[in-house]
Length: 166
Length: 234
Image (cartoon, rainbow over all chains, first blue to last red):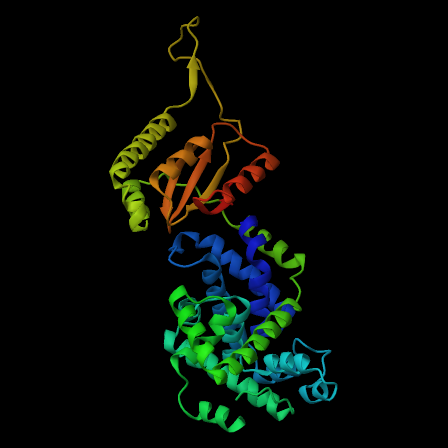
């Protein structure tokens, strides 16, 4: 368990953190995830990578944690989201910080869009693996990411950033 | 140019267009990657969109990396929870042959080409388990020859000694039977339970092992090509 934890806990934490937007809750999540893994190792069927299995459990627990919280709390946390200290997209643009504006937009996406962007770009999951983690058909995975990217482009455009697409 | 890009969005995105993010992340199979490369080479609009995707890819990594790592509190909480759980007895499997069969059924066709030796190994494993059960059922003791009483004077052997170390191991899906038997030989390991979810419980040698020594053994196991997962099962 130590080895499994050592190898995967940071990525599991970051995935959970991006979903629940609360460091303490994300830390509690990873304890719960690995504890479940320890108890249910026999249920792991080995048809997918361990990391895919872990991320699927993390997602399930993160969504459960989110459901337990009130909308008002979520709004407060959204305002104090991960990139607390960064500028708003507009301010970032004024400072010609396109990268910063892009990162800010990445945090402003809906949880559905955030998770799919993270799973593909950061966790380097294939179409099939994302479908397994999120529990949606593979074609939906592809179109959902497309529209997540389009939403990101809209947010950037509203902030005055033109990237040539769309 | 902008008008062209907007047109691209007004219609349904093409299949190749949808695959661009996975191409940027390097997670497409060879066939799809080649299709995307060819499309990028002949379509400048697609290439422009790909440049934007590469930027998104880089910033997503940057953002996630900036999130840092969890504190040690998470790990302490996890292991406290594990310590609080009742000890689960490793049960010697009664349907062991079915589990072994299930495990080997997951092998690739290439590995299955070794099926001639599969039967032999299965028999060997079963023989090992039966032998282990017989040995286990015998109380390890010795009987003194010099003293005659109604009951033999016996002294328990090894009851107080720490048990040999055990680990949960998953073999690589393309592991061959010969590779697995060689690994068991090299590590003086025996399968004492398996394979729930493809995980086998291995026992190493017949003596207790120091914590550092066992941690080193686990590390060596993890580096074995035929092992995809090895964790302490003490």
